[in-house]
Amino acid sequence: MAATPVELIIPGLFDSGPDHWQSHWLTLRPNAVRVELGGWHAPSRDLWVAHLDRAIGRQRGPAVLVAHSLGCLAVAWWAREASAARLAKVHGALLVAPPDVDRPGVHPLLQPFAPAPSGRLPFPSLLVASRDDPYADFPRLAWLAAAWGSQLVDAGPCGHINAESDLGDWPQGLGLLERLIDGGRACPSQPGSHAGPRLAPFPKGRA
Image (cartoon, rainbow, N blue to C red):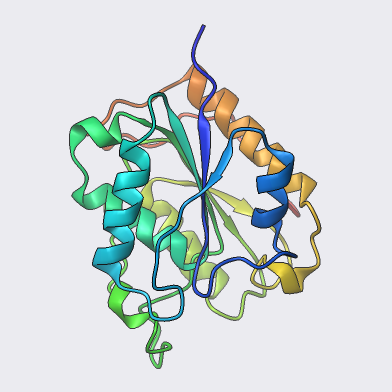
């Protein structure tokens, strides 16, 4: 029987506060572990990638990456630079509301993560996009999902899918996580193959 993955919670800029769904999941999910990326108020791409790499390397079994906002860019950059041994540990990734770091006039704190990597992720992934995210237009997020080989999940109008979105525990997101875990377990992708995710399709509509 396959080992149950550790769920690595990867916050974005300024970390995730107590009302954020990521913080709720840390309490609800027995296998959830928060990744300390450091420099929350002045993020460094190299530092975040290095800290994420160490967090993944510490896991004895498989890991699912649960990233929000700028944390999604950290995952994408890490996947581009990681070793095959590290990539083999990743069961899949839930990427929620990545910002458009290539947008003209992007906030200076996001600029170190530009340009967004465009290569396919070598593990199954879901990209959850809001229709009214102030930090990225939906068509851009759809493009990013295609570039990363991620399955796009239309969350409807949910803002930045953060604490201000008033999602509570975000049960719909938990459903996506469970389906990612089950789908990835049934159909793992080969590390380094750059194959797209092989997951059952999700229904359209609000996530």
